Length: 251
Image (cartoon, one colour):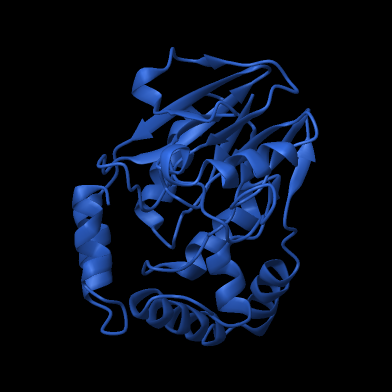
């Protein structure tokens, strides 16, 4: 079994709750689909946990933005990215500071193994393309082009913070409309979004991750100390309060 996590966004309470749930299930392997940092108040701690616990981690757009520049970000995301960078720079222990930067700078754009492909955004634009549920109606050609690039692989993504399964009809099924666990065949053309650990946007405030077990995937929700996370965000002047308040609504 493999735990697939994504979009932690410096939310330490959510990350710790998910890791505790993973440990409770005796799952030893963890793959992170990116966006360890950005938005939240604990970037150092979240990077350290991923370095310690994840077998593999790929690059998300916020990881890239903090390491390079936050291009095409809205103002709230941009402000959080610059604050996050400063937090990593202000680490007093040089060896730890250098280790974190080296880790972020070396994140690959994809993971291939076990007959699956993992990217943060999409098969054709691994770091920053969104595949929204509404694309099945508003932009089906985008989805079909991504399916053409899958090369007979099932793909796992994050980025939109909305869990569910995209099929090449094209069609989108949220977890509550799927049998759990969802069964697929390796090589089946499906794009499976595992949701967000630290900032869900499907109107469910609980942390989201997925468990891959051979040819099935189970979507998991975990409660965490939400108010503690919100209070931390609001205590940082450089992070907009909105980024904390939205957590209560799962948006």
